[in-house]
Amino acid sequence: ILNVEQSPQSLHVQEGDSTNFTCSFPSSNFYALHWYRWETAKSPEALFVMTLNGDEKKKGRISATLNTKEGYSYLYIKGSQPEDSATYLCAFLSNFGNEKLTFGTGTRLTIIP
Amino acid sequence: EPEVTQTPSHQVTQMGQEVILRCVPISNHLYFYWYRQILGQKVEFLVSFYNNEISEKSEIFDDQFSVERPDGSNFTLKIRSTKLEDSAMYFCASSPGTALPNTGELFFGEGSRLTVL
Image 1 (tube, chains in turn cyan, orange):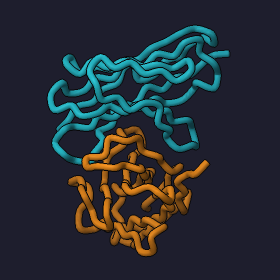
Image 2 (image 1 turned 180 degrees about the vertical axis):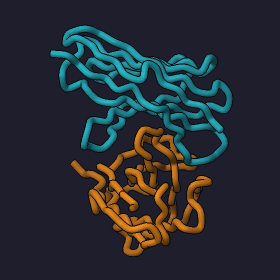
Image 3 (image 1 turned 90 degrees about the horizontal axis):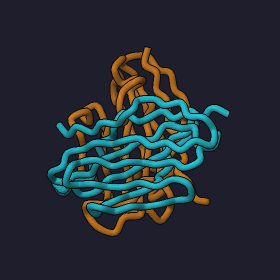
Image 4 (image 1 turned 45 degrees about the horizontal axis):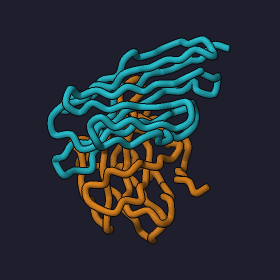
């Protein structure tokens, strides 16, 4: 069983503040790590797919880093806005040659105006 | 912008009944998936489908479950005889992909909520 954990489970952040949260995953048999944003009543939307140790990706105010040797990824949001309120999911893909993404429980982010 | 669409958005059924959840993936995508989330739990992989056949399935995907792509556009998940524990949000996803295993991002539908009474 692959263990993918996210912390914190939920987070309240004042509008304008920056924040970050963590995804931890197995440090062996790594193939890829996905981040998704899931707004209530909508479909999960891909933010990043990361494959290389040390990778850093950015999309607007959101960025992510990847450390495959120690098995963690951070997602950063700079200058939080109300529209950032969502659940952020990470998902791990192993190099077992399979198709299965193993998801974490998600971090529910609420931005307080 | 192309999107994955799922129907129905919500279905209530009696235990033991058959249910078919329908999905229309993005048209030029090659990989298709079903995931589900039981309330309060993690999103779980059910099955992946590539080149008109199942490429992988999880332990959850037992003989009660089947998938089909009957006409080149729809991708369906059938549960033959529903159980109470099948109550969940079922997500269809597709991905363009060019190789196995596919590392590309998944494009999800909005989900079909199944309630089994």
